[in-house]
Length: 589
Image (tube, rainbow, N blue to C red; front, side):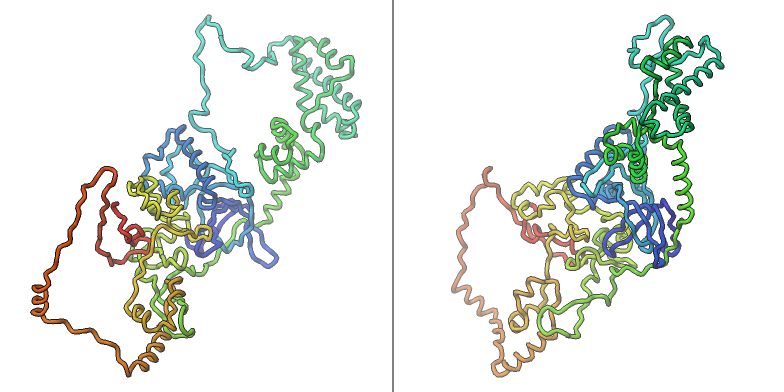
């Protein structure tokens, strides 16, 4: 994992860092090119995480995964724990046909991405570090998900049904038309020499037929090219089929080769396709590879899929294919095959005791007062640990959350936290308290839909969380509210509660006010009366008990109970503190 020893190669799966706070990008290196400035850029294939696609497509992906589980014999999702289900979503990727170029210096490590194997347990991906899987192809331009065409057909769905062996004398009741048709008899009366002579006659007829055809004479202007085209497999197949249909009678078969209308012309896909169609096919093959469905859909919609596949295998036998293959091999030999990644700078999200940068909200600007970093003392938002050799700031700055070194590395690699959030736990095992309309009214729309309440750090996910914050006001702030109203503008300060207050300006304001009020000192609190006076007063004025009307609870009006809990002042994370429902006494209702 050390960056100074990383030597990524072509076709390697690697992590790219495009943001110090967001998770790594997962890409596959296709090419390594050196720019004019001397820098190395990598042409990569893009992979997308679940957090990068819409919720509608995520629902389709989950439906596809459920169908695979029902058909396969592997571990089903019900056998997994909540933590395993949560972490398994971080290992799922979506392949795309999109290419992009990224600086090679942004590579942060290697990983492994494989097509989902239906015969393998999903737990095998969790047991291996830096291992991901994919089963669907994501198109970012049209926002669609499709099943990958390159899957290996392994499993009971793709096994042939072997019929029982027929007993001696038993008739075959299968429909013969659906079976293969016999087109050749090895026990024919003709010798091999006679068959070869008939094939020579068939080639000669094919060459003469191309000379008579106007379109063929334009494509093959020379006799040599016409003879080569007439010697292709399509002419030989027609000749052998003609022999079999005429019971290997040479005179009858030759008469069929040259009917009354002229010689028979047999052309395959190589002759049927025009030069422009061949150029389109080579361009499509360069873009999509052997994905013939996409080639037909985007480049050659007027061709059938059978025609395209047949042309591909014929095209591989031409000199054009051999020439392109040599050019690609020479071009690949001149390109970079690996690149050395130097040591990169530390992440700016690292938290230290002196990296806080508070700004002044109220009062004069330019004070030398620097309050203590508010992140110090917080627990990890993922594992709730309080001890770590290094801490990292995580999430929006106003939330003041942090992660330990282990959880930060997990966040960068897998794009999520180790532990499922509260809303995900409720989705897996819904709580009965959510049925109360008073509680449900305080839950955010995202939490009701089962989305994570933790902020992922990306701008599009910066939504209002379900958890509420408990702001503890100091005595100095309470006193400043009454004395220094001119400097401390309460309305502006309440709108930004996380920005520190300029204590120096407030102290200066208090010093001036204290000098003005020195002639009229503040009223002091009255002294407490003796116990004897209090007892005498209670004897003269006895307290009266109020009449309380107790009503029996009915089935239509359920009684509500308010439970008070003692505040907990232990070191907890921001998201781990008491939520809105707890502060308003809604727990247990």
